[in-house]
Image 1 (cartoon, rainbow, N blue to C red):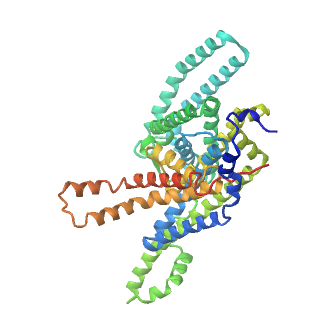
Image 2 (tube, rainbow, N blue to C red):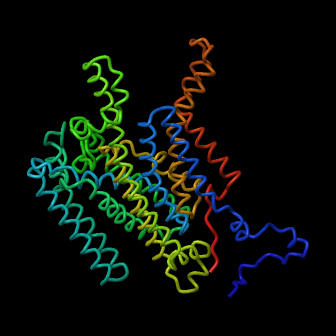
Image 3 (cartoon, rainbow, N blue to C red):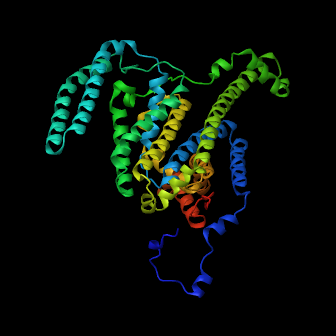
Length: 484
């Protein structure tokens, strides 16, 4: 059935119909099926060029962070590409995933728990009691009495909670603050935190969604950005939780340590066989031993990065398969219908806010998983490094450049933008060195060129975004238009 209410303009003449642009569906049919494979092949060639021109260690590091970035882009693409939700709080969900890595994998700090564990537990009980009482009052009272009662409960609860929580926090943070000063975690394998990171992000997304998803899209963006800053502020200032800006280091790893590999017989034998020709050129046994030691250091670093890449690839492929299946399902068609025309979908009986909440939670969970994976890769949790430029703006650029609404587009966007982000700075330094090779180091122009080398990546990112929006406004791999 055609919605005639949307045809508000005057009817076109025959001449106008003849000169009208070709329908989107026809354009999409004429796109080459080789476009996506060629794009990914070009990306692989670029990474290989870095390996050959710089080092394979740098290339593998780019691959690992590209896999994590692609996962973040897929989570945001689920929200924006499927449902048109403008989430400006990607940074918060990434940080919550990082927090999960600490909570799950770090061993418990028993001294801190003995000092303030009872107070923190009692504080949690008080918070649960406040929430339960407030919910009961909201369900059973009406009008001004309900509002007044809820206000009284919240104020009274805060008065009771504040001294209990404050005393417990002070006790925890006073326990060897140079090394601990926080409660620690559960001491479990860190890969379990990937699931927990998704749960943390999903829980916070549900709370945000219940409040903010009823707002208009621009207000939703402002709300998510503000709540994101609140989450980061809490992580930075609540030292008892994850040491705040003092950082948590030495987190468990799901792959072997380089120093352990360098002392493992099977790994030494593998490296010796692989580099047999190189080792044969050594002048004596001492030279061969020194050469083998250096080869073991390089090989162990590469092995660890490859192991991370394998784990991350498995997670990415699983989530990609699930997203593709969801996109092609009736649920995916319903979400796109809501995105394209909320009024028509509501008229067909669809609960718009409930569906928006559903996909907002799912997308945030994927971002949380990526955040836990990133902290796993780094081996440390550093709340001070989370900023909107890196963990919100850059992920949005990945989705826009890759192709909003296309899962493969989100993946290639994650790879391409992170590759440019990493390589733009050395490229900028190389250009500056070429321009200033014959300049006097004391001149203002020379000093200015040296100063702009580091932020050159920001110029490059803006340039890439402008070029893509000019020549391919729907992204490198645009969303495919489907007709039922």
